[in-house]
Amino acid sequence: MPTSPPDMGSNSGTQPPHNHHTITVWEANQARLDSMRQKITATPVLLSKTAGHSSCSIFRVPQTLIDINGSAYQPHIVSIGPYHHSQPHLQMIEEHKWRFLGSLLTRTQSKGLTLEDYLKAIQPLESKARDSYSETIRFDTDEFIEMLVLDGCFIIELFRKIGNVVRFDQNEPLSPGPSLAKLAIDFFNNAIQRPDDVIAQCQTLQGKHLLDFLRSSFIPKDPQENKQRTPAAATHVIQCVSKLRRARN
Image (cartoon, rainbow, N blue to C red; front, side, top):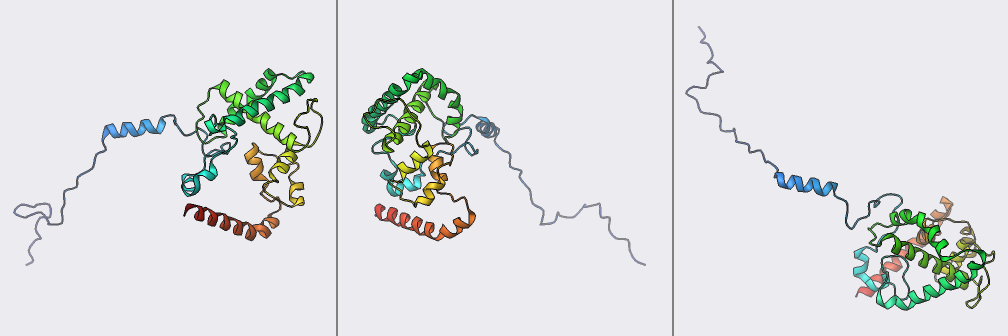
């Protein structure tokens, strides 16, 4: 007669199996958790609130490129914008900026436009201009608007003088002439030689700011044109990297 199996619910007189292990559950440090939560919700100190947004389009040169040839990315004559503002070796051109602003005002005052009008015209754009930078700009409102007016008028006046729209010693009121887009493209074409047909396509080009405008001028409107130019562009990039490496050695 078969015997009954032992009671499976009873472990009296038996040892626990050897494959049982004690599991220790790790507990997060509460102070560390509170610190991390605070950092998540804290307002960035260096990083702009709009970093990563489509409105953010002006960045510092990556440190990896600066390590290769840092002097190539530092302004030696003139700086535009806040990143290199007020550096001692650029002060002479800062004085030229004020002279250019003065000559522009001399011509526009006859049309009823004063320096105060320039400031009032730029003030509504302050927030949009700040949002263009990936870093927090440490200028107060008055300083930032002054810089925008001074640098902006300097660029316009420089383009008009180099483009022979006005002479360097001319004091006549502003008159209709080439668009700012054409003046900008012609100005940079002195350093970046491009065919006339490419220049002609940029006459009505628009950008968020001068740097974005220049970048956009290199993007072909026709995708087929982009495919045709890709090999040449890649070769140019390789040459530039080779030059940077040689400069490092």
